[in-house]
Length: 255
Image 1 (cartoon, one colour):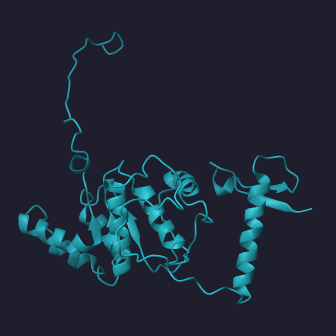
Image 2: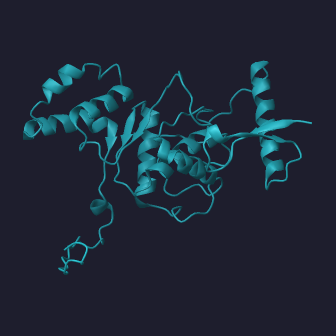
Image 3: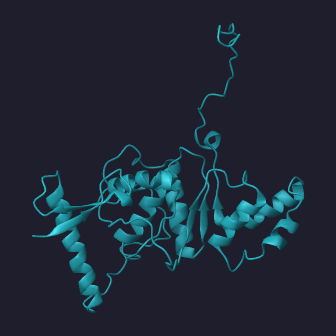
């Protein structure tokens, strides 16, 4: 009888447990079948039995006009047009040009879903077999796993991997220019280390970032690497922010 090391949903890896083959848990048979299928595929590749990759089905540089329904599930954001599809087209075109990128949309505009569908499209259309490495804060790892399961059901997702060679990088940040210069440099250094490799020179060059000419120079430097949109630019009918001050008496404890 086999024993399996089970990674439970919504729990971290240090809470994995060894369980018997006949454990009564929903979908246990499905997950076991997926494990053995992946193990068989890995063994075939190690033995040199890997099949030649198929020719890509599409030109990754061409724009999508709508989501390809043949492999994306029906979902609330799978309509044609919109900022998510625009971002996907930009990501796919940048990848085809070999341009490393920063996806810097404000929070709430779907950076996670755009990234997952971008990677899934490259895989499903035969442009690359992966693997892909996503580096994210620990507090968001569970959400990333959940979204991968929703949007990329054919991916075999694992978390915490070290010393991995990265061929292409995509960063997500809703506040790229609100960070201080040193934090921005480290983002750029991770993204393109052969270009951004001198912290002291970078800080000296943009020491007076309040000047208009330096802001323009920094924007020109980031231009090929960054897509930045604000909610006000995307949602034209969003009502203006208003502030209402309500004056009340102090409570007895406050007095």
